[in-house]
Length: 324
Image (cartoon, rainbow, N blue to C red; front, side):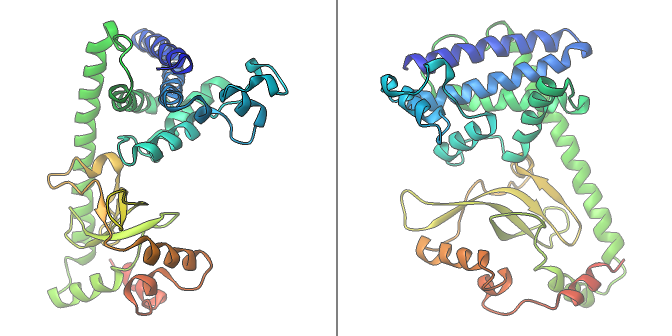
């Protein structure tokens, strides 16, 4: 491990120890706990990148910083101390892109961590209800990075027991929360469609099956809802397989239009029958990505691209979906 990576690794360990100390000091110090844990997470992400090459933690548009990172600092316009590096979110994006699905923390889970760290640093504010979730996000991220870095020392030290306990509590709380979501979704489904005949219910569910999740999702794949057994949608990000000429999708969210069930990345693997961590779309990159470029240009809607037929009338679908 080069000196830049070593410096970041030890800095991460120091900040994480400070985070544990603050966490153990009680509610009045939880702001320091999430701030220090956020810094520790950023430095460990950067340690992994710097281990591959120091230039990977540099802000790409700053040429002077790139010169320092590549060993040509003599040509830089300023001293090494003024080199500009990427932040927590960009470090996460770069590492997750390299590990290709090996990161247990999704972007959605990372954002509260970044918001908490920045909130404390810039405005002395953090969401008190998010403290445990934010803290355990850091622990899970570190647990995934430490095995792929050369061992320098015992990273957790005297806080190994607290680390294990916090993760156990987080898993148990997540399981309870998940069961609550499933129960609520089944209740909603029963209230909406329990009075329908089997034939009418099937017609309604077929009509709303094409209603995908709102917001930006790179790609959706149909999947059976674990609560109501209707067709829902797994949304995620795609990449080209390194071993075959096909496109793979890593799911990070599930939505069911029939019962309103919404699951995040961590919950997908906690089901009794977990969703796959990776889905082979069985399409070549040449066939898959041009279709998505066409979508971006507004050439076709998502339904016609993936089914080959025009989509259902939106007003009809929305009217059926609102039935109670």
